[in-house]
Length: 233
Image (cartoon, rainbow, N blue to C red; front, top):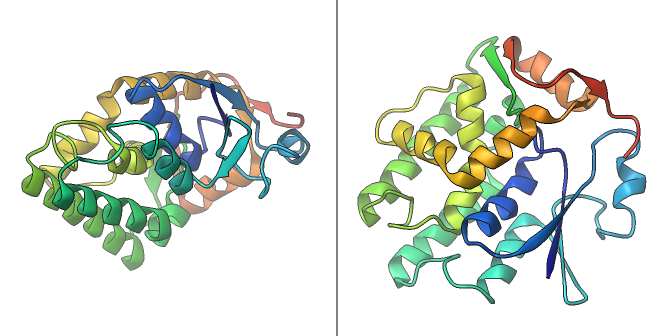
C-alpha cells in the first residue's frame, strides 16, 4: 500500500499533484495529513528527508518531491504518461516546466482553494506567466486532441497543472479559450472536486499563507469553514 503524506488541502499545491493523479488513476493509497503551523515540523519529522510534503512511502521506500513521486508511480502503473512517444515527451517537458518555473504565478497567487481574491494589480512577470500557461495549454490541446493536455485521458501532466486551475478560480485569472475551458475541466474532475470539498471544510489557518494572500490582493469571498489557527499538528 502507498502512503502519501500531504499538507493542508487548502494551501498545499505540491501535495495536490500526486494526490490528484493517484485518485484519478485509482491507485490505492493511505493519506496522512500534516497541518501547516507550529506543529508541522514535529509532525513531518522522520517522514520526509526534507521535512516537506508531499512524500510517498511504499514498500520501505521513501520518495520525496512531487515530480519524483510521479515518475516513481509511472514505473509501476500505466496511464501516468502517454504511450505515444511524441505526446509523452511533450507531457514530461510541460510537467517539468511547471515544476521548475512560473515563479511569479507561484509567489503572487499562492494556492488557497477556499477564497476569491481581487488582485491589487497585475505585475508584468505575473502576466507573462499567465500568458505562458495559456500558450502551453492551448498547444497541448491542439496537438494531442484533448480533452486533457496530452490526449484523451487525465495523466501526469494534468496533475501538475491542477493547482493552476485552483489559482485561476481563486484569483479570477483570465485565460483565452480553449485554455479557460481546460481549467474548468480540471476543476470538474472527480479528484479535484473531492480535494476542493475537503479544503473548504478545513478549519486551520496558517499565518504565512494568509499573509501571502493579503500581500497579493483583497479577499472578496471566503468559502472556508470557521477558522482555527494551526498551532499543533
